[in-house]
Image (cartoon, rainbow, N blue to C red; front, top):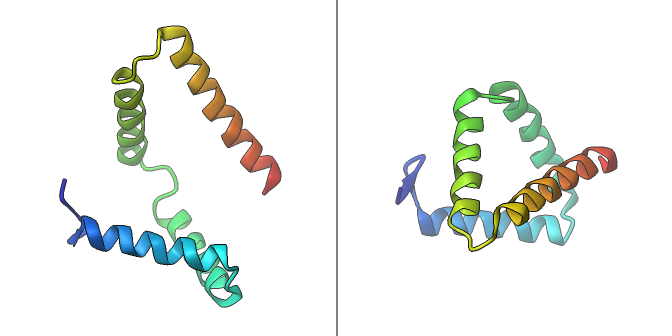
Length: 91
C-alpha cells in the first residue's frame, strides 16, 4: 500500500498539507478551484461500491483493533453518523 495512484506516501502527505494550508488561509481562488473539482469528482465517483466497501473495511478494522468494548464501538459509530448528519445540515 506504499503507492496510491502512482504516488508515494510522502507525495500524498505533501499534497494534503498544501490543500489544508490553502483552505486554512482561505485562499479564495484555491477554494473556488477545489469546489469546481469536487463537482467533477461527485459526478465521477459519487457512490462507488468499491469505495464504500473499502471505507467500511477501514472503519471496521479501526474499531476492531481498538480496545473499546462493543458498547463503546457502537457509540463511536453513532457519533460518526451524527457528525456526518451535522455536516449535511451545515452545508
